[in-house]
Image 1 (cartoon, rainbow over the protein chains, first blue to last red):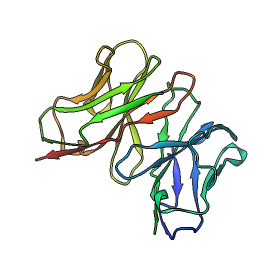
Image 2: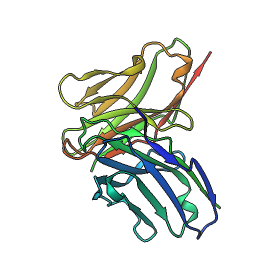
Image 3: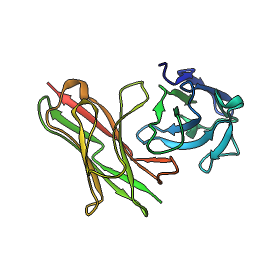
Image 4: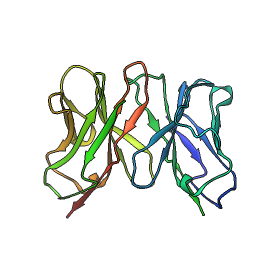
Length: 115
Length: 114
């Protein structure tokens, strides 16, 4: 079974530029999560999708961050414009259903550096 | 709101020694608790979880954790450290059975010395 795929693995941009990250969850997983992991901290949930609908985006900075999950499969997370404090690893995870009994499987992450 | 505190951002042990990583939680509802491991340049992998039932939980790679409600703790242990255990470990708490938002601690970097 293929795991969660993310691309790119690394991205360096200058502040005020735009950037997008892509995630392909495990086949058949209805629930998809985006986390932000700042260096020295634990991951923080940005947004959770159930199929192609948003379940929780309470911690997403909506003035600059956006995410979509068209057709309930792949997802993209966009930052526009980027700030220095957005430098972090962005992790995508998926689970078969949104329940604590169902493990979240994490991708390798995209490391973003904003200069 | 749930929160997690991991005591010690860095822990160093010798190979073969006991591993003890500390986690204390705060939750207004019965907690669901998790330990994840993260190897360099990789995503997080679930080690073990406590939902209900037995308070001593066994996970992968010889790790186990005990839920102690009176101490609001969920410490992770392994009797004998192996070099391959060197990684960062995260404790997390869930906001309930029907939701799945995980609140993570800040992590503990485990170093295993030969």
